[in-house]
Image (cartoon, rainbow, N blue to C red; front, top):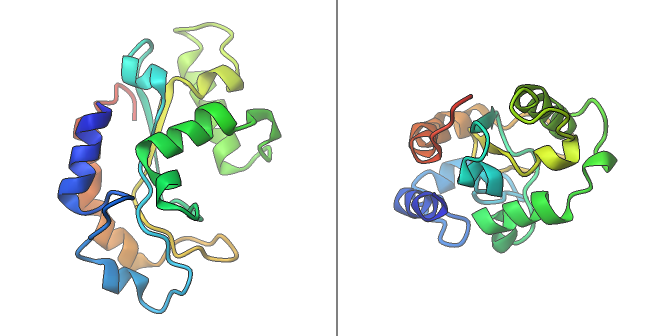
Length: 164
């Protein structure tokens, strides 16, 4: 699955390491803090299909990690599955709520699953692949959505979610 996702990102020009998106100039438009594409988070359990595949699709990545390596499939997975302290997440905010919702959806299949455990069993992708790093974390400009929306169906085809 990860190899297929890498191939898809490369073919579309939206891989973190070999970014050559045809919309790059328009999307950067006047943004000094533009960060190129960030890969989807695909957990080990999601890839193994040990529980139903739950894929969360969010609007945009908010802020982008500094290095391209951190934005790769492996980098995003390492951040979430190894480095992340789920219980330190701000309660009520997007990423904390994502973990809570994953628990609700997966609890019937693995009763009592915790927020710390659930991070190993879901995937998360953004409609907008790049970030303009808005200081107030407001949503990305409309043209990023227009330019990136075409990539979502291909990601979903590779990720094969059971629940979206």
